Every structure is written in C-alpha cells, then in structure tokens.
Amino acid sequence: MIRLPLVLGMLSRYQSWAQVPLTLTVDQVAGVLGISRSSAYRLIQRGRINAVRISQRKIVVSKDELRRFLGLASTDATSTSDEGGELDGAEY
Image (tube, helix red, strand yellow):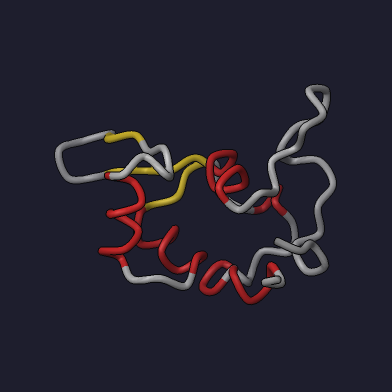
C-alpha cells in the first residue's frame, strides 16, 4: 500500500485536494505519480489516464481524473472533488 504523501511528489505543498489545480500538466502528473514524464505519456497513450490536448504542444489531466487513477474518486454522486480530503492520511 502506498501512502498518498509519498505519491504526491512535487505536489506535496498542497494541504488538501481543494488546493490542487483543476488541471495538471503531464510533468505535474509524472511528479505526483513518481514516474518519468515518458511513463506518464505512455499511461495517457494507452488510455489508463484520460487527458485533453489543449494546444498543439500542451496536454492536461483533470484533478478528478488523477483522483480516479489513484483510486481516490468518490463513489458518492453528491460529493465533489473539492470536499473533504486532507492529503496526508489517505491511502491508495
């Protein structure tokens, strides 16, 4: 089991999911997952992480998609991704 603070890498400065940007670059996603940028692109290419190309050179991943990939997505349809959620205590 991986504790979320270890997974958060470069985004560990955020204290809650509400502080994480709505979209993250592929570099930021790689940092969160503790993987290389090319591995992050590979996950996107294989459809494991859904991403959106917003320009010819920029691909972004939504905060909700990152939560889904990490297994942190809420199953409660009434809750939002910004509710609850101190980052340090959650487990993957």
